[in-house]
Image (spheres, rainbow, N blue to C red):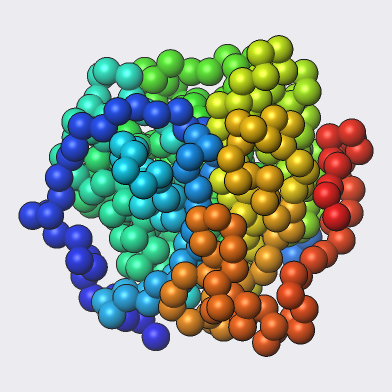
Length: 361
């Protein structure tokens, strides 16, 4: 049922921009649809990488004036400074089959960043697009219609198999890919000439450049045979981590100085046509942290993607910021799987050696 009836609890009157200190943040995503996937449906996968004091919670929201959705929300440290994305639903799926994910990129100086711009904030955007857009086309219309105090790379997909990737700044945006066939990946850089004028591009041997190229490599190698499990393997890829500390599965520890900057707070694979949000707290492989004294509670990384079927979920919190399943989640899992921790075998994929895939069982 279409419950959409205007912008939900986000009025222009309430939109404010605040000056927020810049904090380290990284993430990456990949998407595939049409001939690239086994059954032609759209699939998107992403990792949310953040400083170790930030974590993720999993929520289901059913607003009175919009679509029901499940989403990954970033939670900051109590009493700490707010980041631009604190409390943002950084990736999610709604009951109409619209899914999205995001990576952080900021304009350098030609356009205002989120702390200087007037418009929809990061937090407001996640709630708006998931509650109000049923299709990729409607999501792009929302990007275009309202002033923006958010920016980055945004990947959208819907139940029809349409996928779109946008590079978005506060004043400008470019639709880089829109269609129902192909693959695309991104890290924390704008790559189009139109948007590169706003932010310095990452070179191939930067952190973002490495993850970008690795996504492209794996998506190309596996095009035509991509499934949910394939995307899980890609999101958990460890290539490069031991060499220079950069990888898609981001533990982000410098192998020479043993300094850890940030980690994957969560990882997900989203199937819009199936209405399923596969979610993992922490990094997808679940391997043990290399420097646990610096990495807080991330030794609790699950190492397994749990399939959350939105149509079967009641509103509420399903996973806490310290990785624990809530009673809502436990009841859902027991009712649908008759086991306490759903697991699945993930077959090998092209372009990935066993040395870069060591899964904690």
